Image (cartoon, rainbow, N blue to C red; front, side):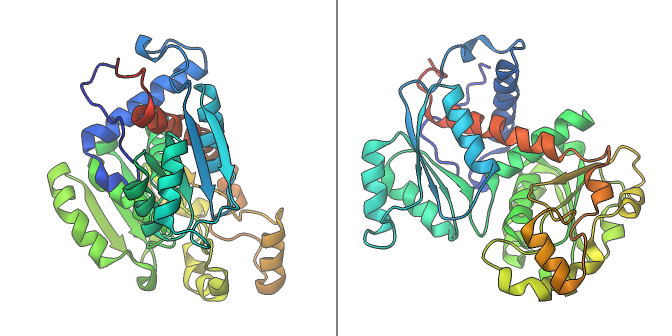
Length: 341
């Protein structure tokens, strides 16, 4: 992997900070590290523990399964040590700036998962070490790399030859991140959402020159069946994001006609269309929250039917695994002393 690209010391806050070539480099690195993990042939410069002697801290202000486990397993695989931090004084008795400077003296990298995008920006500004965005209210860039890697593995197509249709809340953090990523890699990204949940016009305008340069196409429609036509991937997310639980009733009213069903998959016209979801998903009644929603609203499935979720079209657990491989690539690329020697 002698590409001439070096990301050493860089933070990973949003894909908007990365060039098309750098995004492809991270995806290629993730493929090689995945092969290494599975004991298949891989690039020789990736031999050994690439993060040996490194210490990272994971700051979580929001709950997590895949993000936390992916960062921890990825770090351990390559020889790093991890601190999981949920009860710090950051933002309470100690400013984010001061906390960042303290953590930057102790750690080689910082992951943050929480609410305001400004927090992860301030951690990067003041810590002096790479900071990685594990999710904020506005963006979820580590998720997108896993989504793209999974789509490439299953379609065999380059990203700039794919169409991804996102159905549901078109202005949430996952859709924002996918739209940024699509613009950067030249993908056709089609959003099917109610007008009230269209993406920010400011973000669309910001991405327009990027899309023009890469050949990407960003489209929006209120008709989910129009959105999925000729799609390679149909993507959805939960209807109520973390911190928005008080909006459950209004979201159900807005999105009840945007459920991903087998009829919607068939409307793509693609017998091999993939279904992606960042998880968790309300596709059955096997969770406490799903049962509460069923009791209150009478719904047994929300953003996707159980039939679709369990179908051969679904690659959601490959996505979940690929969170670890792509996060590993981010940490190795931005922190390893051995990768570039």
